[in-house]
Amino acid sequence: MPSVFRQAIALDALNALSANTVIVRLGIVFTAAGDDWLQATMPVDARTHQPYGILHGGASVVLAETLGSSAGNLCVDNSQQVCVGLEINANHVRAKREGVVTGTARAVHVGRSTQIWDIRIEDEQARLVCTSRLTLAVVAAGHG
Image 1: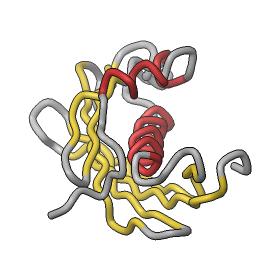
Image 2: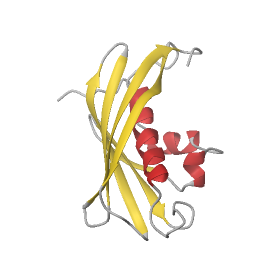
Image 3: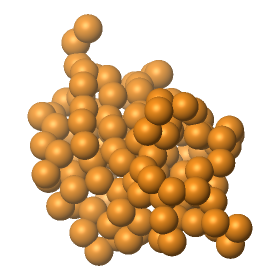
Image 4: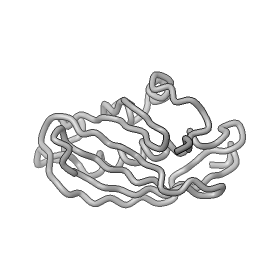
């Protein structure tokens, strides 16, 4: 399968781009990529807990949107276009109190005006914690 990405994936550059954002504050780190997928980890600790001591669903959604939006922007010429979130949904399947979750975004549709990404968030035993679908709009750079 040919890569959906238009540019080489430099994980160090993606992580550097996250400086001074919610991505860094939540401890999200890009860790791996393939021809049609991007992966990142996020700790499950005080930064990502809700008041009852389990992973906050909103933190899972931040991880999902971070992965899908970052992957989407690797599919376009960023001097001309950017991808911005249009719609996201998430189903929280399993509670998680501690450790690390790993999210993987996979391309479903990479079109000229929209993209769709499936994001699967798993625990250390590859058990599903959250599944999400993100729709991105592809817009002219500077008009997001």
